[in-house]
Amino acid sequence: MARAAFIGLGNMGRPMAAALARAGVETRGFDLKASLIEAAAGDGVIAASSLRDAIDGADAAITMLQSGDQTLAVWREIAPQARGKLLIDCSTIDVESARAAHRLAQKSGALSVDAPVSGGVAGAKAATLTFMCGGEEEAFSMAKPILEHMGAHVLHCGGVGMGQAAKICNNLMLGITMIATAEAFVLAEKLGLSHRALFEAASISSGQSWSLTTYCPVPEMVPASPANNDYKPGFMTALMLKDLRLAQEAAAQSGAASPLGAAATQLYAIQQAAGQGGADFSSIIKLIRGE
Image 1 (cartoon, rainbow, N blue to C red):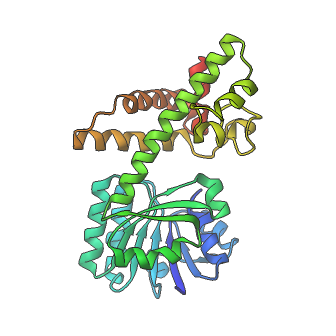
Image 2: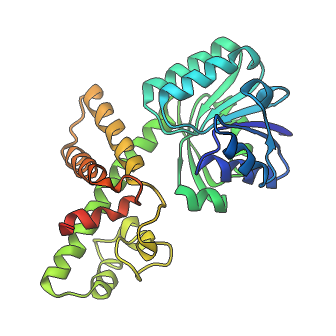
Image 3: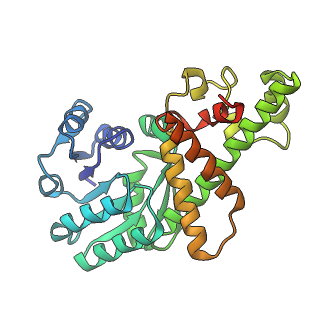
């Protein structure tokens, strides 16, 4: 893989594109915001003047966008140039939009993979993301060496749309366990139990989770926690709310029960309405405290 187009150079896309460039992949980047293109150019990404300019001559095109509508709009625009190329969407979107994107690619004569990520901005900067991939085996085999430049784990979760399904289910668990972890620490505070005592007990007991031992919502427990930095993201509350809403939509469409997911969605919606959408999602502990 010598040349790639990277479309969407925001908080996640820029460090991902930079990781590709560091790996020796000629990476042309495009975003609707000129300032983001300029910033990515400082990381070794070649500035593209348009979508057409970005994809011209590229072997693969990677999109990192905010919604299914945006992904589909971009894929429709690049479709005339997509024949024989590999299209990879790393956005987190609904399963049906992902399937529609695959259909667009197929009609254009391109291979395609839905490959949403886990790991947040820190993982993107360190190139340690986890990619959850959906698509045909041939497309996944082509995408894997590209994605390995940006991540530590590249998983094939099944056919078209199954990468998005895995991501939605993963973040459903994450949103719920973060709220449970926050509730436990607030209860501990009320009972007079120190943060450290609860952390040390639960981290080696049945209450252990990623939300506790990697991303603890109280400060001074783990080095990587946004709680140590006034809950600067990380992974924004607004993005967690988006993913939980996607999970609720998927649950409704498939007939799956999701009572805890519904409750978590309501709590993150309240947190966002309180002006905390840009704070890390672990800041939900402030809502649990009543702050």
